[in-house]
Length: 313
Image (cartoon, rainbow, N blue to C red):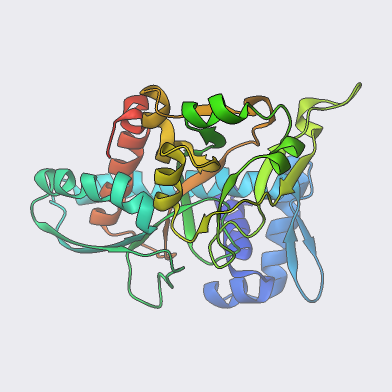
């Protein structure tokens, strides 16, 4: 059985949520889809999906393999597009959406540079913290930060997104430093309001006990409180810089402040593993050249360490 077809089938079932939907999209019987998945799991020697009559659930191994699988399929499609495109220039209109804060700092500044390379591509950038329906609203690509919900969109990981606790040196001089996550109850914590995106709270990794590997360390979520909260992460950063408390922010937002000494990190030894910064796009047989070039452009710039440490205000 074709190994590539097995991978395509696995990615299709994972994105659509059922064997029936994947079979319908391909125009084959669900039994054929099931046999391909069985052959893939047998070849790999691992269970990728838990299949019931009502739903498909990815195992831990399946979730990890899906990301690699999608990247491989995307790279293959890009390679084929490069050959078939030949000397054809990218053109047309590119519609991209991104979170407001991240988009202002780390997407918008790249748009003019992209157009310098591809002047025949026009560009519309939507910045919104609303979760946009990418396919339904006609966007070519979305940039998302953090854990991704189940979706029929194809995802490409652009970079790691690490979060850390930070405070101004003046605040730490007045109040001291927390030594463990539980200590945050005694400090002024600057938090996103309840209608914002950090619904699970601040994530920390507790050190593994004796005989427990780091990979099995417990991840806990806390909801620290304080006299100030806001639905805008940029405002929280400004309050933090002003010395009003401790904030839990992403490295893309505060790395330049840390490098300049305006902020200091605390509780580094309890930092949770990173989630990701992703490009998402609707699943299509042929990805438009302008979309592929835009994603490659983001990956290139986000891979540069000095990109994140640049002071963007």
